Image 1 (cartoon, each protein chain N blue to C red):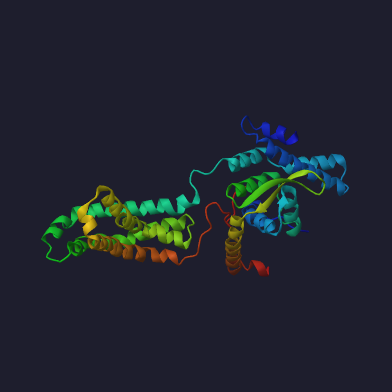
Image 2 (cartoon, chains in turn orange, green; image 1 turned 90 degrees about the vertical axis):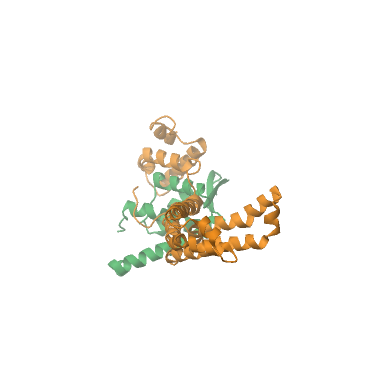
Length: 232
Length: 113
């Protein structure tokens, strides 16, 4: 009754559910009885028990916040998906910029005398590949900042290449199978080489950029208590 | 006489204190608060406003799990036990605090004070 009365004074909708009330009431009951068992007189025991509640507004707010279902973003989103998405976006934006300002890759491929035009394309895309360490560093750093573990930081850093590998390894063969694309089905080696030149060089660059962030100590996850003093 | 630690630091250490206690055995709120106060020699003390929001937060994050059970006096109390995730979380949390105290020790010689 006492807890409910105190908490409901804080405004409608702030009072915690009955289960919480029962738990808090049980705590106060135990507290009162422990004081009485120590020989504290009834009035003082009541006063000290009421004092246990402390700031009831803070209690109501704290419980409400803690009981709120799920945070907008869980740790995996903050540590992997967002940094991964950021590195993927950065890789694509850079690709767009380099494609505009450097040699036209299609022209390079068409005029190439190499036995496999993909190799010539690597040359056309080399400025983009050279920029990949920055992209990898961005993904790994964002993941590190969000408290991601070493493996998560690595995945966030390599994310653009992982997506590219999934494209070449899953989506292209799957779509070719669905559409019954005869050329793709008849030239698996080209697909494998395409995957190699699109994934491997960029992945090396991304790995290079991620490396500095893999050796540093794990940060506590955002949900975890930081050793730094926090406000009560 | 035992001096009380600044409430801000106390708040920051709640998670580790609770998880470390629950690693030994399941306890209910009052027992947790009592044990923390006793085992810290009175230096750490939690009121309702700091203990329960933290317990619910830990439960929401899947580190502890609560269930109603009668205590020795036959009264229903909500016991909290460490989950597998909580157990996994405890070791790195201990390492972080050890690292923090070592750093503080190097800086200010706190453990030799």
